[in-house]
Length: 328
Ligand code: ADP
Image 1: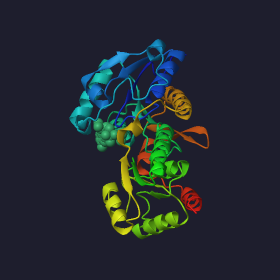
Image 2: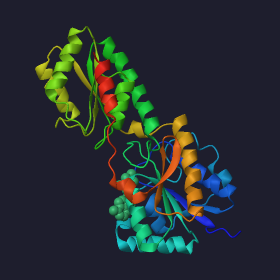
Image 3: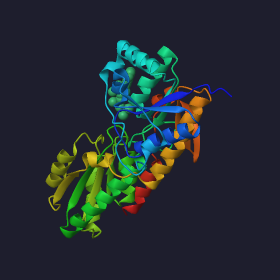
Image 4: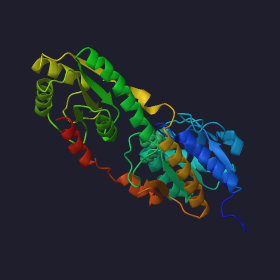
């Protein structure tokens, strides 16, 4: 039977996340398995506009399932936000005989993909790759699990030095708008308090909790702070505030920063990437478009990209409760 699509492209766009390479590998191998051509687009939409393409066969993705970052590179591209930029991108795709693409990225990348799809009717499927876990239509985004493990491991190490010196540490983790990493890593690493953007737990409560900790005999404490926490103070101002109000504490700050985005993807992220890549290619061949692949109740599902970028992921309130109980 004649295949509806004979050549597709795959790209990574926006902020990188661990597991992107495993997803590229999965898309490329699925194409090889289904005997359709696959092209890699370098540097996201920038490479699309410039026609920076390379054919990819099954062997071109050897030994990348365990690598962080993305072999196709990622970029932010302002030109793609203009109709002229998207027209150039479309011309490049047509010239190369590409009939659909899989974009692995975050909500910005999906916004670009859906606009492009509307303008040109070009088939697109998204795979959510971001450590923030802030996309609806999937319980987990690619890279979240790895980032969580990285943060927990880092906090474990910080705790060693905190307890040796009887110190209080504020550890800042990524999450400008969402506190999924902070909340999960905080529970996983046994933090005394967790400050997240979704909730203003208040400075008073923080002081009370720290006083209680001291009284109950804790010699050291870890407070996990998401970048976008609602106290209105950044992590250094928080240190100052606590030192002023609770001089018994010797406070230190550790900002984990970009290390959270790197590293070998966890087994969970590799399996998820492999499953998502297969479904993305299959969806294109089924004539589906403008959809994002996600995982819900351990089933791989498709959600309209527009819904995925519109929605708001909500914080797991049960985890807040568990954290409160654990810091008795
Ligand atoms: P992420 O995908 O990680 O959220 P960005 O928000 O930086 O990262 O988006 C990645 C790229 O997607 C941008 O550099 C741009 O090329 C494209 N993009 C984002 N928003 C739009 C938009 N509204 N219209 C067209 N392209 C967009």
